[in-house]
Length: 100
Image 1: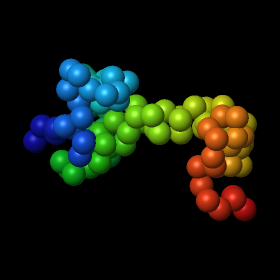
Image 2: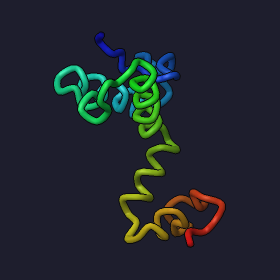
Image 3: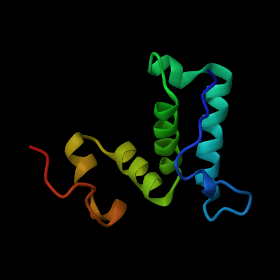
């Protein structure tokens, strides 16, 4: 069965989308799976729901909030920095509770 790599919010992926970066993330993920089957390699016996959930997460990474998350994690020097980032990076912590 050929998997469809579209997320739950694929309706946001049109030519006049508010966030073109979100479109790029989603389309790049679709292309990656068409040429190399990345998701199938990560999840044996991958089902349509798995593909939809993964595509949703990848699309979200291209959103403003997802990109902020990526920037925070990439800039972090430790897990503590990633979950309670410097206010200069995002303006707010990603998690409400501190990491133990």
